Length: 271
Length: 271
DNA sequence: GTTGCCGGCTTACATAGGTTAAGGTGCGGC
DNA sequence: GCCGCACCTTAACCTATGTAAGCCGGCAAC
Image 1 (tube, each protein chain N blue to C red):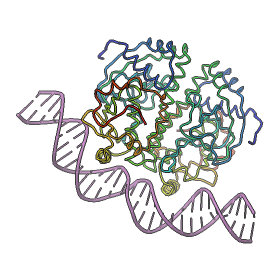
Image 2 (cartoon, chains in turn blue, brown, yellow, green):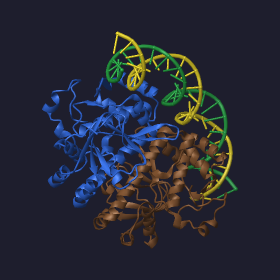
Image 3 (cartoon, chains in turn green, cyan, red, blue):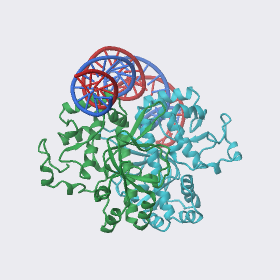
Image 4 (cartoon, each protein chain N blue to C red):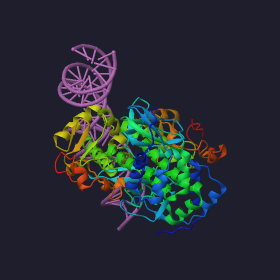
């Protein structure tokens, strides 16, 4: 339950996300800002939606961290994507009614539910938003393809390095990274289920990567210690994220980040 | 080059495919039948489109077999999907201009190119087709998710069994399987690149699967010898394909298939 | 303050699948 | 009728990663 008042910030999350992958007109931003939202808090390790359901609303993640996963025959779990604030991980239910997988909160979340009807109205009256939302589902698929390549053809060290690069860039693009620092509240077991590895091996490799000075973590936050070497280690090339060239720039002015940057001379440019 | 005359059959392929995942009105079928197509023959091992390009047409596969792949840093290749006649594997370029991967002919193909402009007109005038095409890209993504689970969490035997189940059902749904028999013109090296395995291991496992009497092949054609055990071996559940319940039924009347069914008492029902 | 649990960490051992290399087969080209 | 080239097959050996088990520290519940 836990109903919270809907303030502008929830809509802002969505607008930021869509603006990171598409150009939005003022009218389109207004239309998005007018969407009816029903807010809820979701505790950790709870499903937002699960396999087999045919929801009549979509979930906009406002705060927290969500994983898309399937449970397989032998009790194994495969996590197929991570979702961050601004994402609508079940947007596809607009077109494909029945969920073929589940969405679970990996950290405590605030979620805004949007009725399907409101979204279908929106895309009917604003073809540009139809394009933007379709595009969003396609970017999701592009990320999925990269994950497939990651798991299919890269070794454990490359996989993890690649994943950290991706998460960092996506958080950065919606203003959720400060310098090279961000929170990524995922257990080693979850990393294993996402990467097709055992938690023991995740632990081994994570330690290697930290020992090599590529990433560091102080409890809740993760820091990229050497962005260039991390990209090289992960064979990472960000084109597949299809971010607009300046995505996230507005959240990362010199003054905005200087306050909390702690490690290194982290510059906000991403090359 | 090799321009061929456009007959009704090319449009029919597309209509069959979309009808397998969505309900089409007569007007929508007509609109699809009116699409301008530019036909070409593509030899084996040739790219239809490749990474980095920004095509202004989409490719409808009329005949043959296409693979979507990426080349990774160390010269490895990951095949991310197989595409069959009726598919438009680069439909996403309508919304995301630049290709982040390549499409290559795994067998000699006949391909019909459709100008982006014709498709954007189509979706503007026929919202139902916009829905159907969006849905098509989402079904593609659903298949991709299943592949991720396959590669991430299943062993080589399960992966291959699962793949054969999927290919069979997809071909069946568009009328390209005869009983339990179909052509799947893919080398063991390509299977390896699709499944994240070496070709040596593909060979080992394929022989096991044949020895166990799950599939058989007589040169160019593949036969599913034991559909129930193959599904069990692959932990296969077809919901993720989001096929309409009767997809393919019209191509598989009793008389239509009985002529060429050879192995077992292959019945066309899929349970 | 104690208890219990979860998440991180370690170790010892086991195996699925990779690598390399070589021989076989069929087929299109000359 | 032979050559060369894809593709398949087999073998020997190796290693990345899995499995099973247990320890430790922190934190929430009582």
